[in-house]
Structures are given as structure tokens and as C-alpha cells.
Length: 162
Image (spheres, rainbow, N blue to C red):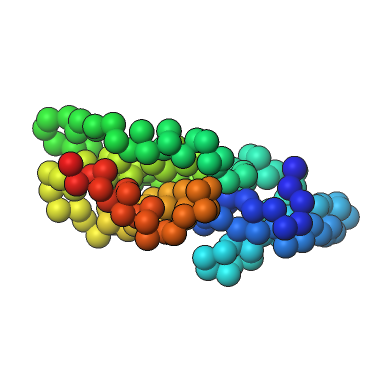
């Protein structure tokens, strides 16, 4: 699926580069791994090649799909009247969406947190999830478009100023 030098997106960590494909022996079972270095943090992750899709390792979004991400961000989210679901329940849902590695799911989390922020001050935990979702989205869109991250961040912020 991937070869050395390819860029890949690892859920919750972001964009990385496949630096090697290695074989390791675990209890007599030979397993192949992608050695993925996350660009942002310089973390190295070993991903079993046979499990890569299940884990959510994928190619970065194509430039043609970026407009769909911005369209989705621009859709108005209506937060139901009355008490918002408990933060712990929402956090679980948000983390599950981010763990899928699907950029559209990440965009959904971002859009919803911005909508909640319009109505109330976000808690520390909500702010951290918002920052993670924004970082993952901005980095991948910037890579897809060959744009500066600051410019992409500004485009995202402008959507939610309206």
C-alpha cells in the first residue's frame, strides 16, 4: 500500500513519512511494519502493514476534496435547545471521530466545537479537542494545497466569524 518516502496520515497524530518497511520476529511470527515518522512531533510509530487500514493509516486528502471540507465547515450546526450532552459523552464521541482518521469526521468535530463556543465558554478539555482537530485539519489541508498553515488557519477561522 505505501512505499518508503510516501506521506501517510496516522489518526490523532497527523501527517508522517514512511521512512522504512521492516520485518520483525515476534514469538516466531514474522511481521512487516511501516516505520512512520510524524512530521510535526518527530515521533516514530511502527504500524503493522497488515493492520494499516484497520488502524486508519491513509494517504493524505487529495487537493480536489479540500473544497468539500470547507463546504462542510461552512454548514451551520444547530446545537439543540436545552442542555448540551455531558462533556464526557461528547468528548468520547469526538475522540472516536478523531481516531477514525477521516478528515471529514475531524472537520465535523471542529465545526461542532466552534458552534458550542458561540454559546458558551469552552472548558479546558473542549479547547484541547478543538485545538487538536484544528491542527490535524490545517496541516493536512495545507499539505494538499501546498499552502502555508497560517493561511489555512485564517480561512478556517474566517468561516466561523460569520
